[in-house]
Image (cartoon, rainbow, N blue to C red; front, side, top):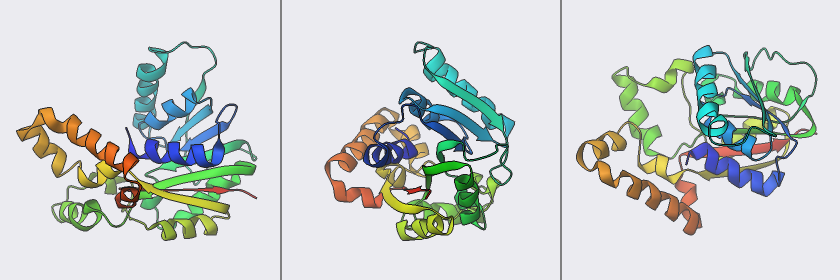
Length: 239
């Protein structure tokens, strides 16, 4: 499971009820893995990214997850090259505009959110997820990787972390109403990609699924633990 997927599923169940017939834009799709889920939930997907390499990776994810494994009928999706600060769309045309791991790289994230809201239908939703601030990643991993000049995520702009309150504030500045936020992704908080996963692969690779599943089980069955998660998500409605 992906952290954005877990958070998006929780928010979708709470606020959106169903994605059937929803016109959805992923404004910064990256690998497109979560969009495969949204298509299977009934969404009419547009995947946007300024980097053709990532659009091609998204196409590959769709080939592996949907085209090869599921019937073709009823699934609607397209891939578009573009920038969220210069959207190649006109009018208020989407029911849901979202991204994960994007706006934290901008100096003015609320402007990116405002651009997302501009092409959302009145009454539609904008969903954003970002790294949480109180994590091993924020206080240890990221500063160390920056010191040795080996921090991948700064390639797209200097990454920042947020509290739920901070992300909600950016959503409000972006013009959204009725905002709901959530923190999740316990496995990513404790089983870090840079620090823990390489060591597990080296010394006890066979136990990696156990530790990942244990984190997922704990997050689902001990509700308070989700506050320690790696990812913060917020969804807001356009008036």
